[in-house]
Structures are given as C-alpha cells and as structure tokens.
Amino acid sequence: MKIDKSLDRLEVITKRLGQEDVPLDEALALFEEGITLASEVKTSLDEARLQVKKVLEKAKGMFVVEDFDLE
Amino acid sequence: MLEDSLGAVWLRGEVSNLKRAASGHTYFTLKDDKAEISAVRFKFASPFLPAPTQPLEEGMEVLAYGRATLYEPRGRYQFIVSLVQPAGLGALQVAFEQLKRKLQEEGLFNEDHKQPLPLYPLRVGVVTSPTGAAIRDIISVTGRRFPLAELYIFPSSVQGEAAAAEIVSAITSAERFSASHIALDLLIVGRGGGSLEDLNVFNAEDVARAIYACKIPVISAVGHEIDFTISDFVADRRAPTPSAAAEIAFPDQEDLRRQLQAFASQNLRRVRVNIDRREERMNSRLHEYVFRLPGRKIDSLSQRLDIHLQALLREMQQAMAKRTQALDHARGLLLLSDPRLPLRRGYSITRILGEKEPLRDTARLSAGMSLETHLLRGTVLSSVEEVKTDEDR
Image (cartoon, rainbow over all chains, first blue to last red):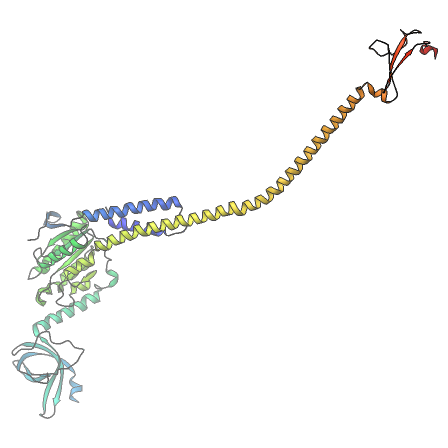
C-alpha cells in the first residue's frame, strides 16, 4: 500500500467534502472511501514492524540482501 | 605608519615562552628556524572571531593571523594575534575553505539542484558503518517514528584511509540497487560524532561529488562535533546527527494517527454540514411549496371554487327551472286531460241516464228519454222533448 497515495487521496477527499456544491451521493461515497482509507492506513501502522536489510554488491549489479541484526 | 603598511598577515611558527597573564591576555614568542617575533593575543581581541579550538601549548605549531605593531616602550615589533589555530588544523581548515569555495563556485551547493525529500519514504538506504552508533540510532528512531519503512544498509567504513572511496562506492551501489532492484525513496549518508579528523572524510571532494550526483535524495547525517562538512552543503538536506536525520526523514506515526483521526472527524463534520445544508434547503423549499406557493394556489383555488360553485348553482338553478317547466307542462297536460276542465269553462257532459259514455251526437236520442247532465257543480236530470240534427240548424 502506498501510504502517500492514501494520504493524498484523503486530503483530496477532505477538500472536496468541504465544498458546498458536492452532491449528497458523492459526499457519502467520498466519506465512505475516506473512512476506509484512513482505517487501512491505521491498520498498516498498527501491524508494521521496521524491516532492516543489509545490501552487499558482490559484483557490479549483483546484489545480496540480508536481514540485518544489530550486533 | 608601520601598522598601516604591514597590514594583516598569516604567520606560521612554533609557540614558545608562553605566558598567560592575570589580565587574560596571552603572550608568547612565535618562531621558526630562521626568525622570531613576540606575539600577544588579547583577551578581547575581537568578539567576532572564534576562540582557539584548542588551548595554546608550549612547542605547538600554529597558524596565527594578525598584524605587526611597534611596541614603543621597548622599540620592538610585536605581533597582535586575532586568530590562532594549531597548524595541522589550520591546514585542514584551509583545505576545507578552498574546496568549499571551489564547489560553491561550481554550483554544487545551489538550492535549485536540491531535491525535495519524500513526505513518506518507505524504502530508505543508509550509507554508514554497520557497526557504528549511527545505524543503531537511525534504526531506533525509525522504528519508533515510522515502522512502515524498510531500511537498506549499504555498509561502508566511515573513517580512515579507505573511507572516502568506500562511501563513494556505497552511494553509487545504492543508486544501482535503486535503479535495478528496489527503488529507494531516500538515502541517508553519515556517521556519528568523532574528532575533526574522523569526520574529515565527509569533507572529501569525491564524497561531495558522489552525494551531489546521487539521483536519490540525500540527507547528510554527520555527528554534530563540527558545524558543517562539505557533504552537508551538497546534500539535499543536512541533519546534525544520524538520529536527527531519521527524524527529518520519517513522519512520526503519532502525528499520522492524529492526522487520520482528524481526517475522519473532519470528513464526518463536512458530510454532516452537507446534509444539514441540504435539509435546510429542502426545508426552505418545502416551506416554499407548502406555505408560499400553496398560498397562491389556495387563493386561486378559492377563486376557482367560487367559480365552480357559481356554475354549479347556475346548473342547479337551470336544472330546477327545467324541472319546474316540465312539472308545469305535465301539470298542464294533466289539467288538460282533466274531464272537469271543460266544465270550468262552462261546458257540460251529458249522458243518457244510466250510461257511462258522454253523448257526442243525437243519433240514439228520441223524445221522452231521460238524460243526466253534469255541470261543474251539480247534475241536472232532464227529459228529451224534441231531437234536432245539425242539418236542421
């Protein structure tokens, strides 16, 4: 999930909902979409655990990616 | 006169006869193998110049900036020092200033070359030592602030002879990795604090050029022992420590959660406002329909009702009138068929006594017959004396 896309979309939705001419059907659909997006982002934050990898370039363009553990 | 003609100069030499007076001024002799001059650094030489980075010591090789003046009471020249630094450091400093000026003139510090940092970097490369304090700090801050992120460490030594080359190779390696494997949103290049010599690798021209050329946005994150490194100037963003770099790089998830909450409640409020506004509008429309437009309608309705009523009344009257006429007509007909009607006019009905049929002619009559004549009021019994036909008249 692209969190920046979600947050951008949320911003767009919020702006649109603030306009006076939004038809009610659209407003309710946008609201629903916004709530869904927000809870998706929140869930992904709740479940997230930082991933740390070490990247070694064995030969040019040949990468080995390992999990990184702090010694 | 002399002061004016000599002006300010840099002198390099060894410190000897170092004396710190109670006044706070420092007196020493600056000498090399060919010459010497007595020097003084006044306590308040200039508030605008930096204090020595290291206290002066006997025998220390220094680089001193100042001007020669005549000390009249003794008739000797004296060097008034405004800036003094250990010569080694001075050389570093000079090299730093020279490189800084050169790269600046080349445009490597230009603001318009700096890339904006992504707001929510998900995949971030880190060029640093895998065993240093820097990576530990970055991991800890990132884990706390933005655990959605993935950190990709490109190991490099960050001090010693090979460090500059290793940092350059790690940066270019990160770029290749980003281009061909996993796109990196951001690169943090740095190390924790250390001595000036330790940090000096981030003043290397090659490192500066690699950072400048890097297509991934770069945050320089060199420990805060000194103010700036060349890397700081060429990077897209400068952080005073690796921890600070992670704080600059990543949004704080607490802020994000608040923001999400704010979005949700703001949207809810806005939808409510929308509904309220709609309701209001509907109400006012309803009001228009029910109270204003209908008002007009009622006016015309009552007019129409009046018209209808009048028409109805007229119709009824006409119908009544017709009916009355019909009644009258019928009554007339009835009246006409009433056998007594002729009697009213003076006619009378005559029958042979005992018969039902009224007499219409004289055919069966003969003298002596008894007749019964009905008048309007009363009946007359009579006898026939003589019968005359119409031909007789």
